[in-house]
Image 1: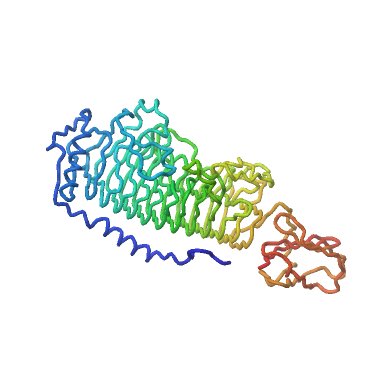
Image 2 (image 1 turned 60 degrees about the vertical axis):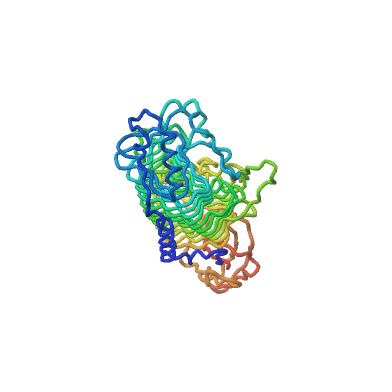
Amino acid sequence: MVWQGASIFSFKSKSVKHIFVILWVLCSAWAVAQTTIDIRDLGAIGDGNFVNTSIIQQAIDSVSALGGGTVLITNGTYKSSTVVFKSKVTLRITTGDTLLAVSNNSDYPEIPYNARSWSDTYTQRSLIFAEDADSIRITGGGIISGNGLNVAYLQVSKNFRPFGVRMHHCTNVTIDSIQLISAPQWMVHLMDCEGVYMHHINIYNHGLGSNDGINVDACRNVLIEDCVIDSNDDPIVVKSHSEKVCSNVLVRRCEVATFERGIKVGNESLGPFINIRFEDILIRKSGFFISLPAQTAIYLSIADGGSADSIFFERITVTTAYDTPIFVRLCNRGLKYDSQAPPPPVNYLRNVWLKDITAIAASNIPSSITGIPGFPVENIYLDNITIQAPGNGPVGNTTQPELETLRPENDIWGNTLPAYGLYVRHVEGLVLDSFCVNLDAADPRPMLYFEDTLNVTGGECMRLTSAVKEAPINAALKVYPNPAATTLQVVGLPVNELLHITVTDQLGRIFMQHWFTHPSNQAQINIAELPAGIYYLQVQGAQTLYGARFVRE
């Protein structure tokens, strides 16, 4: 198997550590502040009612003009609408104190980003805004409350409610040691930023809809670690609203909960994704008082002309049931922010590693890895994955529509997929090294189903199945070498019986069949003309039907 592009085996954790140590130094070096302005000294009132927007903005402007420093929010709850960050400014909200957002949507000015993107279709409003700023930080142990549960927002379309934090084209951004609660929409949107360090953040974002946690959008050199995020939409999502590269993103030691997708790369995917890592993630049940079914635990999709290379999900523990544990999809929805631009091309999704994962499936919609005709998902490695599934599924339909222009979600085919564990279609290069699905009850479908899939290898728990009924495996019938390139040796044939030998692929297409009587129990079959892939050898004798699988290299 040839792994194209950046090697899936060469992204060493030691190198990652060094990269992000350097990132941390760069983000922190400016933080020796020489100026601190307490907003109370400018007349701020922390009674939770007085609106302090202009005072906080005055403090930010003054600190930046003096070469950098800290704006201090302490001893109270300080109400505000939009404040605009400047370079070399730290906003420090001390433990027990709060920056509280106003609840009138019209009090937030519309501030569009200075470059067009798919973000233009979302709100232009936020509590905190920054653009083209360098060396900025939010910290202090206190609370930023977006006031998103206020009933006033029921009158505003969810895509036009304010975000908590919007930052565009900023460098050396640090957000740490802070609680972020109840934004009217997404909590944090970072777009086209470079050098981002987010750690020890606690986000609780349950509001009136579309309440994401952190959106990393076409950013580079990002480290998110030791965060707890509970949101009714995606807790952590890496996406791309523009054609700019999103690369070198590491999310580790985080705890997330949601009713949507636990950890997510893509969906909105206009640009390339390179070296995106999720490590040591706990996906648990939400603490929200209403319990809703959760959708997909691990989600990866490229749909809008972007690409993905070297994507890693490792040591992921899912302790609550999700409808579908794993969803990987390459398709052709083709979102574009410029109506005059030509449709974006379908690109590639390749070199994906899912390792050391335990999950619980709540529905009969299996995990899936799917491309579209002519554009296969390439080089996927699944290692040490254990899923508990309910069973009692439907028979399943082996003829599924492509649906390549639909929004990529786990349920686009309903619960009709013909496998209870993993459905694979339009894939080249798949390693299933201990992919195991345990059932609570019997299921009429096979664990694995493959269609238009080449170069599959497997280990423990792997049971290859296709639309054609497989002959029973008979220990007396052996084939070697396996994999084979030109000639397959078959041992254990019935002697002096009229035999019908058939070779079919996973779709049941017959590539070879012969009738003959053989004087010995061995025969050679020439397979040099077969395309590379997985095949079934079936031998029908007078009394018995034998079967064996083999791989043509």
